[in-house]
Length: 211
Image (cartoon, rainbow, N blue to C red; front, side, top):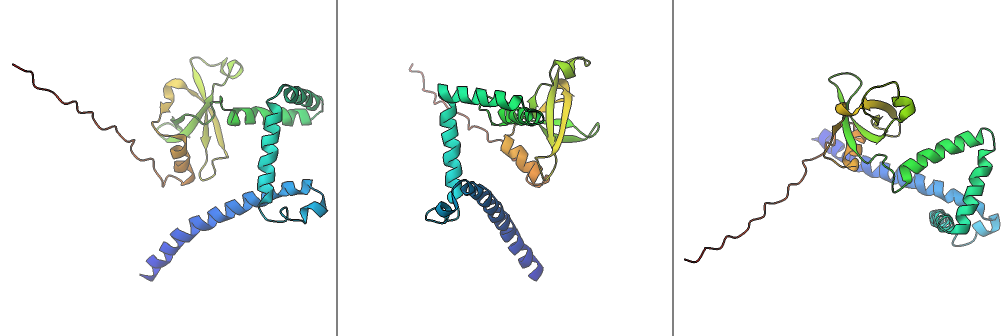
């Protein structure tokens, strides 16, 4: 009885503790933007209140977004990217990160939009993956047929994983959402996706035909 009570307490406190730890990490990290302000300003209200950096970070992101959507801002960002492109090492890092961020954060991007099943790491063993696009002509050239680039995350950390080039015929579509697939990976298979809700049949009343 005592053992069951102890594990019940763990089941309640562990998710709560991890959630608080993650939120504290996020707030503490975003509060670092306050270092952009002079020391005498940071020590005054409301900037000395924990969490103010979150608001400042959101304001900076919105401000950069507003600037980037007008004509002058777009010209400045083009000039800035051209300048970074001329700096050795920096250009390689910036271009790689920008391509990844454009794929993941762009509203028109297709990354992590389609959960699938693929055979990995061998025949007969299946795992959850996400179609992230096509491998392109340079990688698909030596191969025959149509292929897809599939990202297979590792559990319980989905930010690391493998990029597979899989024939389309061996990619099995899943009728689940991306969130459900990620929960399955993060929970190490414990939280399995539930059945999809089915729409109730529509009953059309039949009127008797007058004689």
